[in-house]
Every structure is written in C-alpha cells, then in structure tokens.
Image (cartoon, rainbow, N blue to C red; front, side, top):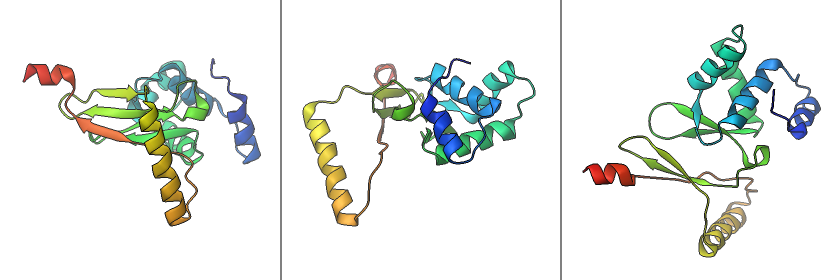
Length: 154
C-alpha cells in the first residue's frame, strides 16, 4: 500500500485501535483519489478489487471511524450519497471549499482564495469562537449553483 502517513498510525495506536488492512486500504484509496469525493459504495468497490474478502459493512464502519477520528471528512452534496475525502492534515492538498452544480452534480474544489477571502474567514472563525466560547478546528463550506457547462447548455 502507498498510504504512508505515520501520524495516522500513531494516532490510531494512541487511541488503542488496531491498524488493520481494511483501514489502510480505505486510506490508500482516498489518498489516490483526492479530487473524486468518493461515496462509500465507490470506496467499497475499489477496496473489494484489492481484497475480495473486504465487505461493504466493514468499509462503511471504517469510513465512520476515520470520520469520527477527524482523519477523513464526510461530505453531503445534495445527491443523497455521503462522500468522503481526507482532511487537510492527511493529504498534501490545501484547505478548500466546494462548488456543487445542482444540475449535473459536478464538484469543484476551490483553493485559490484571495487575501480578502482569507481575512473574512479568519474573522468569522474568530468571532464565532469568541461569541460561543467554541474552539473551531475546521470548517466545511460549499456553494451550490450551476456550473459553466450546464449554464451553456441552457
């Protein structure tokens, strides 16, 4: 397996969790597909190709565990299927937001923030933290609309 982030293994061991083949396979699949926002079914099909003895329930439980640990994020794009991606700490892709086309379902990772956008988000996080005495560790922002391709087809 190519997935080699030692901090994930250390974190699992520190929490008394075993580093199983299924967990490493799931992490490897997500690491090799950073732009795809894979569903549990897609992760299962890829994992099953690697190891036919891996079951869907095991993959689903693994995704749930890794989400609760903050190693991966569970995303909802309005199509009724949860999608998963590694968190920023787990990958070499910078923090990003999502633009979701409500027509075709295309998801665009938005990473090229302007200085003004960064300032605004920092200010919002700081004010929310102070207002609710809440330590923000991460945020997920997605914008829904119609992509350029679907707009042109109209």
